[in-house]
Image (cartoon, rainbow, N blue to C red; front, side, top):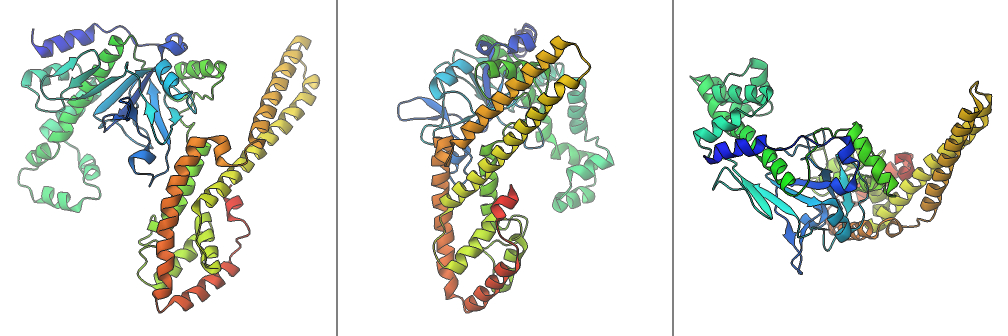
Length: 467
């Protein structure tokens, strides 16, 4: 039996996908992380997944590592991981033993705030799936491989026979260069060079076949990667789930189990985007926009002259809290401590969180008053009252927790340490730029302009306005 035939037979033998009853048990959770990089190793030999902060030497202060349960992350508006060649599988229980509980649980986005010195530590039960063109696929005790290219004709035909109709249609479209005009326009969007090459080609279908050859083989390798992931998961004693999505019953079951375990959880895929971790990343984004310009041609670091610099600052002072602080700092003529800015913005976020919790308490208290007026049986009223009282107590407990937070380290020491390392970079970069400003012959004119700008714009508290 050839390797291609063995692959098809092995894949066909896999048991059914896992449903909500299976995913409701935490011992069945397999943590999955798709990436472009192999795990790193700490000095003690343990493997770990670094945070983005660690991987960028803290130029980007993202200290969370994100995973899914029992399936490879699917593409969405925030990113696509189809081209991530490496997939890491490890038991949830082992991850918790080595790293503690995650910051939040969701079947489609469970993330840990990691120690910036050790990353997300992996156990010796971790399975690493990675490309290798030696054979179509292989699965051993601690990992697996699969082909990314160099497929034989038999291997190609085997995989094609296993694709769903939509994938097969796309493959054949790339193979034959048979794209519709609007599809061609979409593919060439923003790349005038390739568009002109296509327009001048005598055999346009041949041009398209060559252009999309890699895309065609990406379909094969992507299917093979996910198939090997599924087979590897089964070898580890887990089942893959194809039912996990935003708000699905399986994801709801995971969230309910996590909450019963005392963990923060959501059935949504947007847990991180509404978190304090995301808030701090957003604030860093304000700083980066000030430095690099964002969608503008220049930021403060590379503005070529006084006029460009003033125009850029005037545009951003009204909504960018970091720009407001920079202009204030220039007027005061002293170094700017970005860690203090992080702390200030963080406590503004805490203040906002407390406001919404207090609003929830008031609303539930009002709801409690009106239950007796409802034309429903007494036992139903009592049940509703009990549920409302329980929610009020949960709100009060949450409020007490936020009241206890006076600085970032009270919330998460790892986040505080990561932001401190990033703030050191920001403060140093800014100070180098600030010290050179007086060397310009337009310095005094510039300072007069920003003083007028600062006094003319309503900047009582840009930090709070952003809340």
